[in-house]
Length: 280
Image 1 (spheres, rainbow, N blue to C red):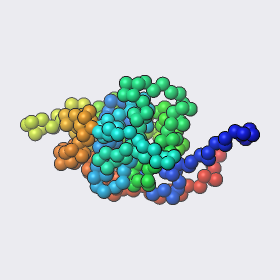
Image 2: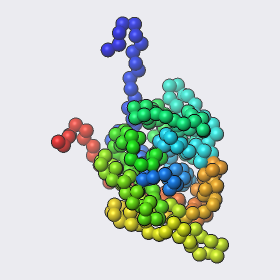
Image 3: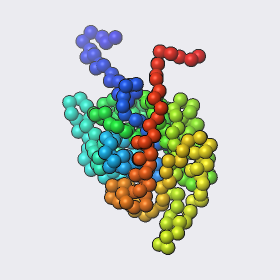
């Protein structure tokens, strides 16, 4: 209780995406380790969904390795509209990120409670305007942020990004098992850097083959897409020109369009949440 004369704290906002009546599909994009192109996949998948006519937003929850604003090519900062934050937009995708609140070369040295609060504000204090899809770019691994988001967004779908080599696939399993531990459903696997197509038209599997399908088989979910390794994909990420927007008819652009179509055509089964019912 506030002491006499103290200004009472404003009531806490609820997370709209946790409401069972919310029509937004929340997708957590996860990976077992860094370096597999998870953020690039998140950005281009979001752009492909927006290009198909869906209202799309991205939360860059990789607090330490924030990169989504740069990959989207967002130059403007968020604006305040009343007491809410209006997220910037590029290529039809709205975005919020720690990158808007920290310098590019600044290290974010936060522990669990601060991370938890920042993520909660990303979800409650931003005027998202009821998107059709909310993609959340998770940090690699299975730490505090992933656990917090499972609490905040219990209706989320999880998609695991891996590369073809068996070592990466085995590490990616951990992200999937973490999701199961916190009662989230893994809905699919995305394999990145699947092959390189040479000037001779031949596919070269530089990082091996089969890891994505093997992981999908182990998790009993579909492999929803394979993204080829092409220089334009990396260059677009560095320069804020996502390939799904700049070259949608390219080999990689078509892969993202196909994945977006798969997601649209395969909604999750309707689940009824009764928070008052607990199983001991």
